[in-house]
Image (cartoon, rainbow, N blue to C red; front, side):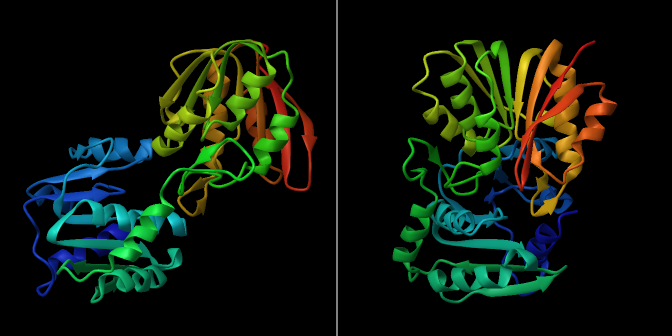
Length: 335
């Protein structure tokens, strides 16, 4: 199960804890058997694999939160600005007199964020269990709205300085162009053509470079698991008058089409933990989706053992470039 979620729900099972309301909104929703006993709970989850997990649990999901609720629960992401922005989002969807309840692991800074939450809400009730901390507060009309306004601003999409690109707190490479993507972009050839895919496309940087450099691209498909990153990508790529198709999709589940070329800066973290198997799953999907003689352009941290995976997938590969941190690999499907 999810330790932070287990801890959060303990607060509602305690004798002196808050009562389970008739309706609740769950930001960063994750399923839990105990939630099936709640009268009505609606979840918002921007990450596709977790959104699918929530729906498989039989719960109602929305693409964007709306309305106001007597309880808003929060399982935040991993960045400071994202977490504080989610506190503000919870405030925006709370009924007068309602309650916000949040839970985080200790390693994610739960104690620090509880203090931040208390600055805005005053009295906070806290419970610690499973190396996590859950904290909640009810709105009695005395909260510090100026502080919530500051936090709300942290979640607003904004330009990366000295560029025309929009990003948002919580998405990969928020506030800058990722150095690995910069290295891959430097070595993308101008002869890419036909049907191209950008897997784990983020806010669209590699797609933008490919469209700028490669007039032979007839169509490019972006697949990205974070709906917030895709919203940024739509804005960042609006300048291009080509066939661009954007998909909120979990790449590890495979792709329905095949491609002449695939671009990839694959993720290798699940939450705060390194997950090399996630990157390997991206490679497996790419290999299956390449046409014969199709090419994969990949950037990764130098220490990640992707070459063995490429061998097992029977792709012919070579390194195009590397620096002190990253390596760029081109792989071809010959059979």
